Image (cartoon, rainbow, N blue to C red; front, side):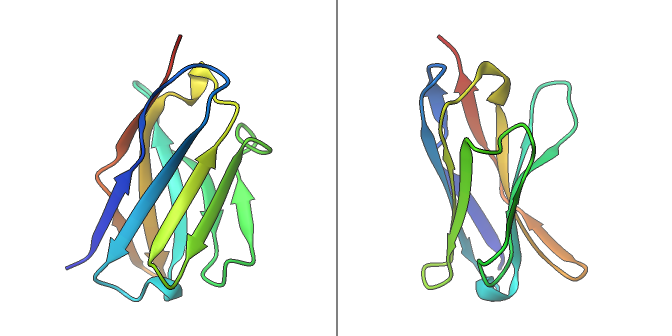
Length: 116
């Protein structure tokens, strides 16, 4: 069955870095657009970054542009999110998403907390 498993979350101080990883299985990974979303307490889930299936196109939310980098490895069925210069407002549960046409899959999420 389809699985998206996120890892790499945790507690980090402001200005620090974390690398999230999402391992996918149960579908043809290379055919899917992969994204990272996040949801902070009391807020709606928002798109953080997206990477197209051929890995040639990426898009970032304005709030993370220049600090976060999304990448994918179609051979390993993984998508990563490198997060640098983290801020307290980056605190949220981060979710991996796979999408193609009308099909969409979500991971269970990983908590990122930025605090001193």
